[in-house]
Length: 82
Image (tube, helix red, strand yellow):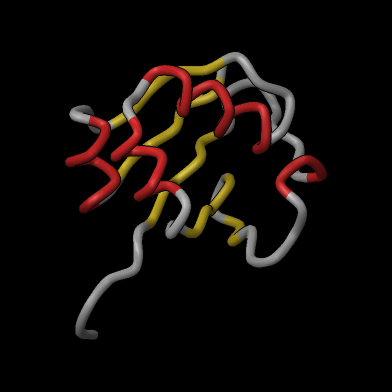
């Protein structure tokens, strides 16, 4: 299992701070969480960036980002300010 943690608007849209998923790649994990939440969540997710085990995903294809058992995926919506 991997943990998908939500922050800011993603957390609000999901209605929870995290989900546990069984997934081999980031793409699989994102598909799993999309099935659990509504269209508003999916819209927010489309604007987010992702960090897997402390490593920013950036522009990499989500299907190529492997998740090991126990991985943590951070879902980060754009933040204002700075």
